[in-house]
Image (cartoon, one colour):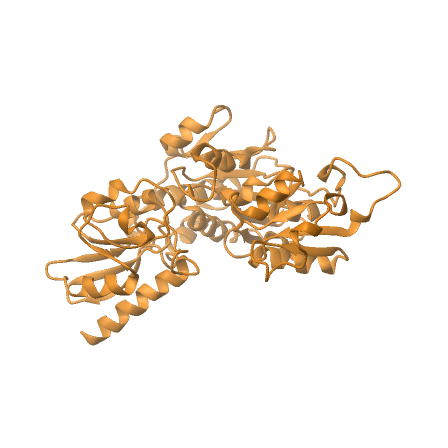
Length: 425
């Protein structure tokens, strides 16, 4: 393994979080303001209170707030910790930015409290993040103590007390988490893919891509940067391609027939894990065993069951047009495609040639005769029109937040409806 300096936090050196704090002291030395109160900031609150800090919560949802927006005084707080679920279009976000309050993400906050010498691996991208993170963990855990955190439902800050020198941490990083980083230093940075996404929650496409590229913000000479330059959007977005490890040119010998993880698009995810396994000096057999035994994650081309000769597949994690188009490439025959959800201001026209069954906010954004209010109505129509259909693919092409809490709930509802019908057959 090449010598790599482990990441080490700033041990709560907060001087640079604000422009002014008099040498005589100030009241903000023990206060944090949390913007938003979802899973991530609840973990932040718990951590900070345990460390002896005072915490206030502010949100567009007044029921979550412990302080009114009119009572917020910039000089009283170290900074604002912004939940990844808070959009730049949030009225509270805009107000705090107008006050010129310093904002950081939970990832940045956790890094600043990190006091162990660990190897930090960060994974971002429009698609493939979670599968790549899980594959990396599967491969590296055969030799190292590996933790996963970030955009997979495990706040980074919640694992800090478990870490020891020499451990590895694999972080899944969304564009929202990367918007508000400052000092975060990753030993390994990975960009899996780039394509238009989240255009309902960011200013524009350039802003979204630049947020992703923030993963490289504090990169040092000996750090690794892995990506795929055959992705046109990555190739265009990267101005400096020096010292980039282009995995699109990296060859591995894998027997596809032995993989439980199907689809050519998953080969890129496998390449990342394979490369890191070799880099961190894991035996080839151990790497391949980890990859061959890796089970597909739920809601990603997940087989639900059959109705007669028709196969039902749950791909609820496909929350962008590109993700759905990628999933469609897995099938060599015509499929009955179901899409729908919250409008993310994406271009859905590429889906029209598949004559999809559409529901939710995007139903009027796609030219198709099959338009429905909700998933229940769609499924009723689908089961009435199964003649000659070999595969029903539920691959929504957008987020779930118009009618569901998240993509998991959406996928589970799809599976529940399917199984009710399949049981009747």
